[in-house]
Image (tube, rainbow, N blue to C red):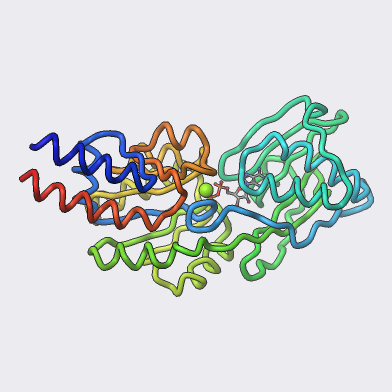
Length: 293
Ligand code: ADP
Ligand code: MG
């Protein structure tokens, strides 16, 4: 191999905001056949805004509920958290993270926190079983929105919807990968309805969409893709993506909004959050690889 060609390629990539951790990563990148994308914060912007927020039953007043939820969410780094915190603030509620005495993350489900002596679960339908909620309502999945639930004392006390939008470069990145002979798929912990909506927004260009996944499901699917289609790249931002990023032949993390653990386990960090850099990097890697051989 020629160290100079590799060095120049890494330097060139770094100048465009792509941190590649070593020449061997560049070599793996040249042979990628499949790209698996996380949805929230990767294909989409991960900038959620609350569409609706309601308290359920007579237990808690809306302002009180907003205070609890936003205080607990202010301890979370999930993209949904800042959307909920912003919503509370715009409704004159001041979140107090210091009043949260216990905090726990359930990847792929949501979070748990204790405030004012109450134990509160916030997340998707899965969190309701964890909260031992008796009745799980069958809320109709509406286009595009992610539905969130709040539970306390085995009771549903709140429900809300959040929306997010695709990044402008996502469809273009996937198309460019396709022209390089690379198939793209989506792996998300979000609902099937939200995943399908994102796929439609992209113009149905993803070869496969897998939804409602736990972190270990993402690892399993990456493993299956490797066996079925060949060398696999995985792009993600969250702590729920870290195990799958490690499992992939090339793991790519989002540098601006991504979690620290995703950046640590990945082989490449996108400093600009621009996923269009990925096909360009593959092209660069293939060209460099040819120079080496
Ligand atoms: P993705 O794979 O799309 O990035 P995650 O695995 O991070 O999604 O999250 C899966 C689901 O878990 C989210 O769609 C959301 O419903 C729920 N969830 C996770 N973290 C939180 C949180 N802090 N607050 C509310 N809901 C959450
Ligand atoms: Mg994510």
